[in-house]
Structure formats: C-alpha cells, structure tokens
Image (cartoon, rainbow, N blue to C red; front, side, top):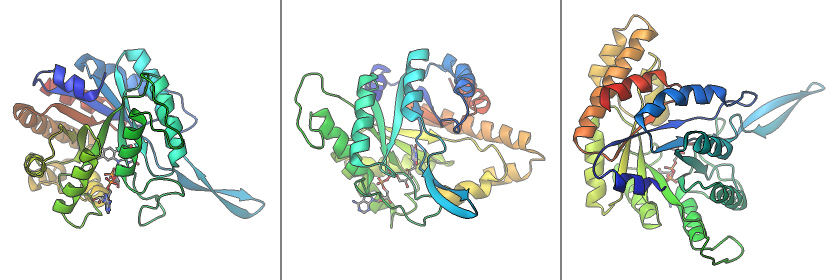
Length: 317
Ligand code: FAD
C-alpha cells in the first residue's frame, strides 16, 4: 500500500515508522532482522531502506594504487523485497541521483514494480566523500526533481526511450526530502522551500524531514511550507543522540542546531550509556509533542540499531 494511503487510513492517528541502512558488503541480513524484530510490535506500516553513495577504494597492484569505485552497502532493493515478504510490511527504497544513470534508475524502478514495492524516496544524494560538491554522473540526474519527474513519467507508461501504456503500469507513491533548518547548500530557507514546492508540483506525494532537535523548527517549517502551497504530508524525521561526538558531528554533517539544554545534558554525561539515555528521553519528549500536534507519522533514523528506537517507541506509542 502507498504511504499516503496508510496515512489516510490512520484517520489522524500518528503512525510509527523507521529507516534502516543496508549492512556492509560481506555480512548477511540476519543482523538487520535482529534489529527489526523488536520494532515490529509498534506496527510500522512502512520501513525505509537507505541507499549509499559509491566511494573510492584504492587497490594495490604491484606497488601502484588503482582507484576504483565501489558501493560499500549495496542491496537496497533486495533488502526491501526480503523485509516486505518476511514481515508483510511496505518498504520504501531510497532512490538516488548520485552514481546512477537514468537507465539504471529505470531498471531499478522496474525491479521495484515487479516486487510489489509501491513507494520510493527520490533523493539527490550527498557529494561523495572525496568531493566538495555533488557531481552527477554522465546520464544521471542533477537534482531530486529529475528523479521525481522520471518516476512520474513511468507511472504514466513513459519509459526513457519508449511509451508503453497498459493498465499494469507502475503507480509509485513518491517521497522527497525536506529540511526544517534548510539544506546545507541552499542559499536560504525560502529558496530551499521553493525547490521543495517544485518537487511536490512535479509529483511528490509526501515529504520526510531531515532530523531536527527543536520541534519549533519543524512547526515553523510546516507553516512556511503550507503558506507556499505545499499541501502534502510532512513527516518529521527523528534521530536520537547516541554518543557524545554527535554534538559536533551532526551539526557539521547536516548543518542543524542542537538546543543548549540538550548540549548541557549530554555534556554532563559520564559515559555513552548515559548519553544514549539522554538521547532517548529527548526523543520521547520531542515525539510526544509532535504526536500531540497531530503529525501523520513519526519516522525514526535507526542507523541499524533498534534498542534506543524501541525505548522511544515504548514511551510514545
Ligand atoms: P535536492 O532536492 O535535489 O536539493 C539539493 C540542493 O539543491 C538543495 O540545496 C536545493 O535547494 C537545491 N536545488 C534543488 N533543485 C534545484 C535547482 N533546480 N536548481 C538549483 N538548486 C536546486 N542520502 C543518501 O545518500 N542516501 C539516502 O538513502 C538518503 N536518505 C535520506 C532521507 C531523508 C529523509 C533525508 C532528509 C535525506 C536523505 N539523504 C540520503 C541525504 C540527501 O541525499 C542529501 O541531503 C542531499 O544533499 C540532498 O538531497 P535532496 O533529495 O534533498 O536534493
């Protein structure tokens, strides 16, 4: 079922969902299942599976270093299919511009259609680790809106090189990313919101936000989005702080603010177990306020670990 239909069917009740990341190459899927199992009691109607950007590895060939591109965490669509069938839950693969040609994206979407996957998140992807700015590959999209348009075309039977109109066409529900504290490259929040509106006008059905730690940022963002004519559901993304280093890392990577009260609480912690507990308590507080405000879904960034997400869900659902 589509994410937007899950939201409609919930009739105002806030749903629980979460995002997982594929294991690194060489591992099997069991650890992922072990982390999903404890969260199923909260009945997520859908689970997101991220896609990682490719990265460079250097292979020693007789003393010369050979630079090769590889994906450390492949398997997004396969994981989506296995989770969907194991748990009878909808899955949402993240589809990236970065590193994929339009043709590869088309084949990926065809795979999703055959597997009964009805939702996709259309994302640009970040710059590669070694690059300062995002660079599309030849034949790939530059912005997420290109993906949204390609997916919408496919929904109408318009493939890249042919039109195939049947009543068995794909009918993907499309999610896109939104940034309550603006995307790091956007010149202003207002211009970023305009870009978001363009994605919605191109056919995005819902928005999932970047993590934030101050609910006021989300509420203001939703208000500004509505004022701009964005009328699709805006799902808040929540990430619990789990280690002390997150205080530097998260603002650096995502350009988000951390409230002073949370900084002080984390600073006072003697060890990472205490930090994890603070993160859980903060996320529960945040989630309960968002739930009381009637958000459609609370979407948690699990980073592959379920213990803290379970503790949060227990305090909220
Ligand atoms: P876009 O919507 O393309 O926007 C990127 C930037 O370009 C913004 O600053 C925007 O304002 C600007 N822009 C947009 N259109 C135009 C235009 N036409 N002209 C000029 N400027 C424009 N990354 C991954 O690698 N894998 C994942 O699985 C993943 N999942 C994510 C899930 C969520 C919920 C979120 C919030 C982010 C996720 N990301 C993921 C990170 C995401 O890929 C990055 O934040 C990326 O830098 C931007 O992606 P976007 O889809 O928002 O890009």
